Image (cartoon, rainbow, N blue to C red; front, side, top):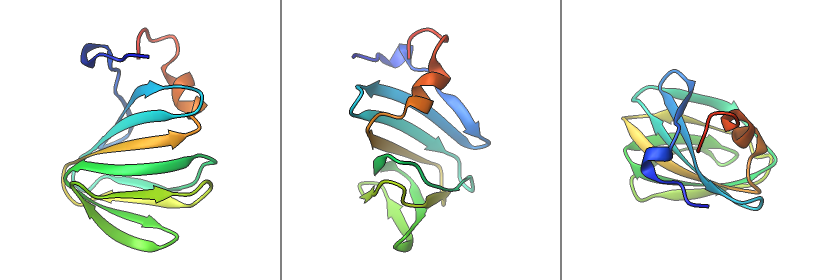
Length: 115
């Protein structure tokens, strides 16, 4: 699967959190999340393994290990069903990789043309 820059369809998950599904297979998915300073992605969990890579900015990630500040170049891995949430300390862009792919994200984009 190839997703060109012009084919991307960001969607606002909540105020200040813009989510874009990039490429995926059944086994793996890559997403980009842009967060505006002060935005909060509430604590949640899901059955997917997730790896977070901070491209730019700084976030506070709260997980089972407690809160930790991650900045550009930092990454972390979250286990399946591990509770976690994010606070954007400044405008930030992160990559999220999921295993397996999140069908809820795929379904949210269906019927809207190319991803």
